[in-house]
Image (cartoon, rainbow, N blue to C red; front, top):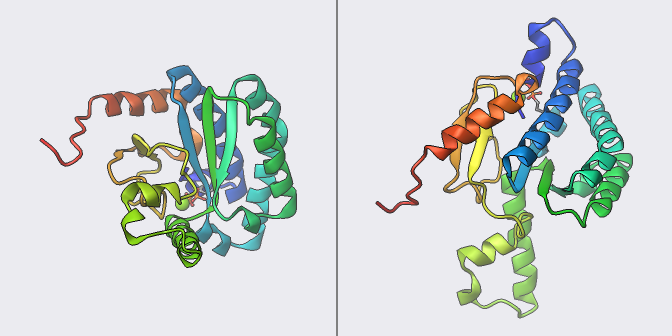
Length: 222
Ligand code: IPE
Ligand code: MG
């Protein structure tokens, strides 16, 4: 979800206004996914690298997350959305963590759309955490060399119970992965839009899905 800062800057507003507007696009995108029958939506909301931003921006982003959870949990509950989160969640401030846990528990029975928030997330950290867990299991004598397969590694990632994404939508015209789902995106189709995240609408989501539907996925075959 990129481009909040530029959206604000273009209007002479503080960056936080861009993040505020961006959280409205989240609601729009979740609704659009439900309408389109998308089963899994994973939003890259806050990266491990984002902690490097000025403290005021980080605090503002965490407050927006709290507000989002306060305002949207009931709606998610009613609309069949199951909330999940991936990343080093123990690094989040306690009030965020509390609301997140509450929303995750409350919506656990839903299955219409699985909405995963990537928070304090990076693809490399995820792989590090997976390898550490595999080392622990190996030390305990539970892993043999031949057990290590792509499926085995997938099963040790934060996303063990989520299929690899079919489509990655990258906003604000950036042409990089920025440490997102590095392992899982191996054969994902990529749609890049110049739209800044706060300007991203349902129509943009449908356009991305339409673009995706025209792709020919060969997975290295012919
Ligand atoms: C939002 O966009 C991403 C978050 C960390 C929430 P940015 O804050 O990266 O916006 P730009 O790239 O400065 O425009
Ligand atoms: Mg950015």
